[in-house]
Amino acid sequence: MEKNNFLWGNSVSSMQTEGAWDTDGKGLSVYDIKPASKDTSDWKVAIDEYHRYDEDFDLMKNAGMNCYRFQLSWSRIIPDGDGQVNELGMQYYENFIDSLLKKGITPVACLYHFDMPLTLAKKYNGLLHSHVRDAFVRFAQIVIKRFAPKVKYWIPFNEQNCMTFEEGFKNSGYLTGNKTVSELYKIAVNSLIAYTQIADYVHNFLDLKVGGMVAYQEMYPASSNPKDVMYTRKAMEFVNEDFLQFFATGRRSPEVVGYMKTHNMAELIDVLDKEVKKHPKLKSDFLAFSYYYSLVIDSTRISEKAVPNYFMQQGKVENKHLQTSEFGWQIDPIGFRNTITKMYNRYSLPIFPAENGIGVTEHWNGKDQIQDDYRIEYHKDHIDEMIKSITCDGAKVLGYLGWGLIDIPSSKGNVEKRYGLVYVNRTNHDIKDLKRIPKKSYFWFKNYVLEKTKELNEE
Image (cartoon, rainbow, N blue to C red; front, side, top):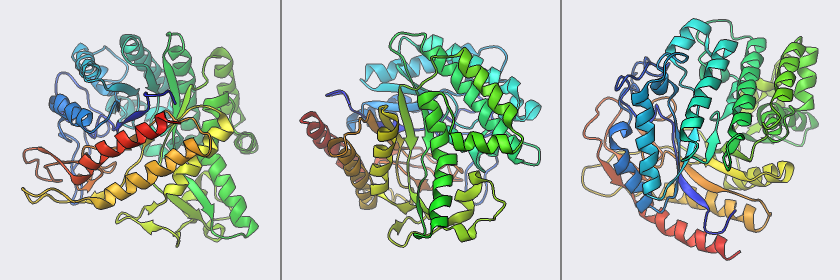
């Protein structure tokens, strides 16, 4: 951490914020065609940040934030994914980034957050196909070249390790097929090849930094039974450490490589190795991760024939030592500290917690401030443990980004599962006026950031 330069801020995706799904030449993504359901919204409006970003940036600045991790929408810039550039889309992000910089907010750009251009999903089945991988790299190089003078930090894929377990099919634009294990591994390799080429390209620009990002799944064995311990370790290796090791060193986990070789996937290893040799500047400058909860693995629930990538889903059981949110996520601030410290100990790269937060059902009565003490407690406890990872454990941490600190639809489209310090006046099926209303946590956050920044600067 550089003194006086700790990054406090907000993290989002484009489809969960922008709206304007058919405005100024934007093409369709796989999210734009998802219908609303009983408990979710469609994605056409989100919180209309496309037209209201200046207002939202002012709210961030006034809350003490100096960083915003946002996403550049692939289909807004290249409507069909691999054709002509939509200059109106480019200009939107030019204005967007300029507004951040004028307000003293550091932009962190993510390039893919699961919203595959619909044309590429329908024609090629998303990242399963090398054509889509190459189209994504082209898009990435176009925007990096355009915005390199203004954006220092780049994250090629949000939660890239999600390509290694069940979510990988949905997140990669895969629309049709049998969802085989070999297809999942091919999607994962295509994403790593894209990362390799993009990271190498970023390093052609002076002072630019690139970071691989994972959804870190902290896991504990259900007991001291050696089988619980082994299955938990394997799940951690295949889901977390494999991609982190690649981002840090350019090499995948030996255990994962061994599995691929014994399951007729050696060709995928060879293809990736060739790309690594051609792109020597691929290593990450920092490691980013999202963290919301931890989980416990019970080996007795896991099929003997299960792929290690699926141990997490099959073996998950409740941790009786932790509180659970209304959406079933177990709250574990100490796990957050352990995650940061383990990552730094193992890889010796700056760590960037890029998403952290709690989703709660909230309704505004039209006049009174929302008293979200549970959110204050969640962020306070996690920030305090992060500080310990720095001051006690010696970890180098770039910053702390909360997830969706202005209310946005959840990953499944539920607007009423709210993460924000700021309430946005809409529901799943009623857009209302989209008014922004700070909650109690908003005013707490500003004071706490000031306090913690002072504490870090005294170290």
